[in-house]
Length: 485
Image (cartoon, rainbow, N blue to C red; front, side, top):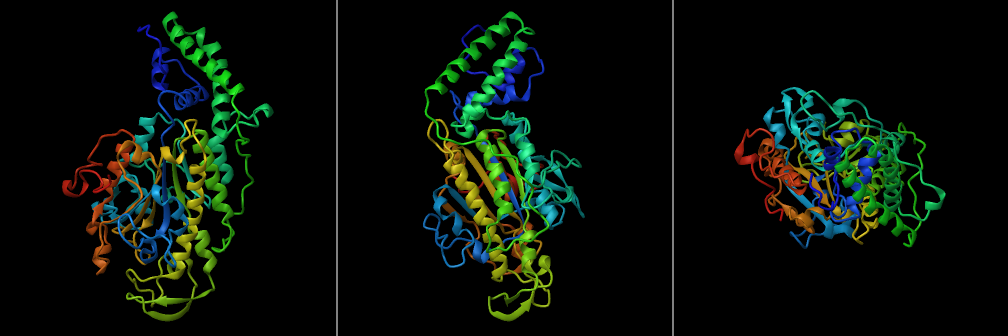
């Protein structure tokens, strides 16, 4: 075995060096944080977010050009994200081409193919065919505890979850705030009172390093002399880091307390504070900041807000945006989620006020989530958001239909810029001519295939693969997102 002084010890190399012995999760995670504070820099993080229903395209798309885009025009959905515009890449004209492989375009089919490349078979939207980009990135990062969660409502079955490891094996997502807390923090050591002045990241580093010291006492008795030498060299560096904590001033912060579940059966006024959503997303943000997970795959429930519109009368519009008079909302799914008011016929691209309000409410809580990541500082002074890639979209591209050819996408964070895969602070409009007909909304006719976006997402985490899934249509699926850099 090489006796050269160990620079840093990765999770895989530690397992290899001790001959395949079982190592506790806290020990592995503490090594990740030792790397985060050392030569390898802060942890990389991925957040995938899929909302329900379809986008309100007229209100969602920014106005203006690639770099001088406007997010603050009257009624703009993305206005809450304006303070972070330099860390946003907004996409219009990207479609979920995976849906075209089997011709099934629906809520669940869109969800399950957000990260997996195709439906398993026509008419069966609840399963998808791998590979799945989240699973590949989880493997690349060595992430032991990815978070799969529903935000703002309890999980309602595998058919509505959307991340799949392989055909027929849905990954269960947790719902409710306590479920999210337990998934993130159940094995996290509680913070001693004397550590109350540590930031969450520093507290987690310190407690994990201390736990590692305890674990090492047991491990040393089971290792050979060469492995003991490498482990001792590594632990010596931890002693130095723990000593540094004693003389470093640190602002107050704590691991969050375990929450009491809100009532997920109550609707939410879209003019209100959105406590249910912010509570769930605050926990996710804390988990990412602490490093209890590096990968969060989230479904955002819209129905709890859409239900709030029942009984209200609103103005309706035709395809050209002309007023069609008032109508009473009696069905939150069809009237609000799908904006089907004029004799319930599908209407493409019609501006819809309530759809806009629901999506803007989600934008408010997403902006808060991103700001929390932006406010949390790494040891090198950069923000957690600087080392994160967030991909936010919805199930469907058009509010009034089940079609996936014009999906709203917002990418946020600084990780892509740091590694050269995404240049932020821009609006890329791949379909600048607007929508001239219903056929343009279909996934098969999308301007740019989601496959290329997912290739670029993988590349951000060091996975060089320019074909996502089976090469069923090389012209549409090969390569990376155009103009991304």
